[in-house]
Length: 438
Image 1: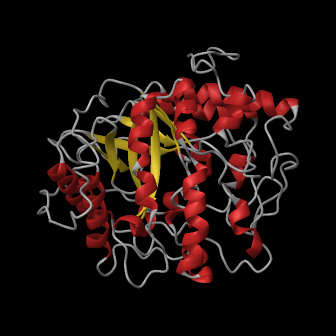
Image 2: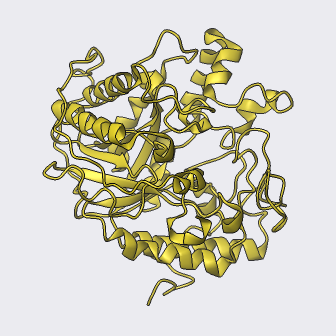
């Protein structure tokens, strides 16, 4: 539960811990590799080049490009502003259903072509990073007739290959949403029930992965890894089926190219040794764990020193995993104040406006705002917390910050935090050295 501290992570941590899975995941023989739809294999667009990132030896230092191809209301509240009162639209599914395909495409194509550009990739590289993690929904890769989503994302996604290559960055392509939602969060595309694993959703997800791998099979110098699925909610899913999906997904991706590393989520299972028996003998398996300290009433009540302490214990604990493991999402937030972070129209635990929470402090300057507008105490505490996490996660295989840019969230916006002097530049610069020593 929340008092476990170092095990508390992500918006689902409370639910995940309420479901105790004692048995280690079973091992399965890799499933048959299906053909899927390989029509998108862009042989003429990308020339084959050798992979050149060693996930077992090199450190991942990256940032997520959140809110780009999978909408999240808190990252780009302006996109959802017209539904602030009615709250009829809360995710990309309801957004697309409300507007219809023509209007949705008109609005989103403008967003896709402007939210991230070559200049962003250049800035990311100049900040000393070596990776971007790009979330993409299944609906872009293997659309279903019954869904309201629109397509066209892949034409823009293709641009990232040359952008990353020019900037010297590697890409982790992250399947962020599965059919009927793997976790019930708005960031899966569809808020509500966890319907993944039912019906034909697993095969549909595998087809999406296969199409993704085949599309970039000749760009493995840049697309060095593919993530099977973001944050499947282990407490609401049959973990044996999740493990089988991981095996089958690994087979589909490796059939496209042995050069891809295959990343899989820890599915909120603890401790970090939980997946040690999984995939033995399979090369290039990498674990992604997400670490947040703000999604329970107890955590938002931590002192700045407690936040630092909780971050520091994670480095040694992650080293107990027998595969490369990195923190694929984390941030500098010590509160959940950001507008709509907990869902469109929902308040924050920190100021007591979220259901079943109590007042800890004011969200002034953090509900919406800028890095420059943060108080001196907030600036000090955020910088200290970021440095502690960097020191801790570098003890494992590295980290990928969430997220590169937002419209108005100063605790999460890497671009703004770098500009405001709160994210270390260079990356090993320290105003609070030695926080994780001893």
